[in-house]
Image 1 (cartoon, rainbow, N blue to C red):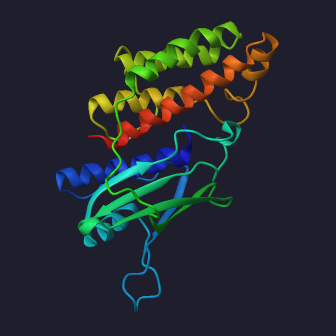
Image 2 (image 1 turned 30 degrees about the horizontal axis):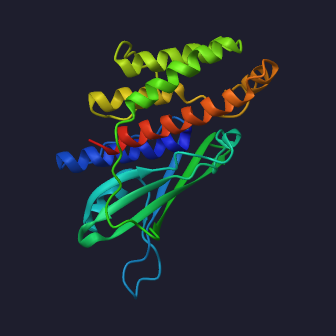
Image 3 (image 1 turned 90 degrees about the vertical axis):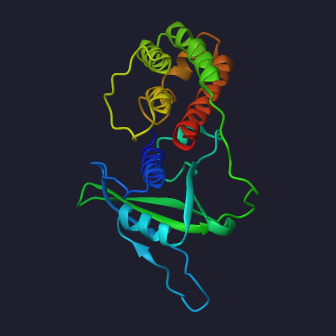
Length: 252
């Protein structure tokens, strides 16, 4: 899964759990995340310098002090070029905070690689949510549509002689059906039904750069005259993966 998406999802899931249980937030940086900070918008007319938080815990406490009531993860379910999804700074991501009296702001990330530390520096910057909806976004469970596209793209992958990806799609389907819940990768702390959707999305997230579903499979499909089917199924898969993530992280 895209690391930027995973990072934001983990932060939102941890914050949502803390809000629900009225407890301190529990979050640890991933092995590739060497530094994280949050830059707030200045509060009040006289405060020109923005407040900074140098950990997820201090960021969460600052949000609570401002009247945080709810939090959501947002990202578009369609993209213009899936070939760019493996690169930093391409995916639009927002952590949206909902405060008392209807105030809403969002934090968007910027990632930069630190060679000496051999890891990433992550900076979330607070912005006003322009043209925000009057009501908080609500996401529907996409399980049935997700299963449908997995059922279609698995045999398609085998047909174009891409068994590695076919096996990934099969495994994602089994996770979604609850037949296989082996957790072999880090994941946010989510309710049982939500974690199935998230893990299935994580397993089926095959978009990136070299060695991804964007690399050789489109050429294999073209050789068989199936490039239109490849494009259609790939677009549907990406949409359902994102919808699964949005539901899993936000609706519990």
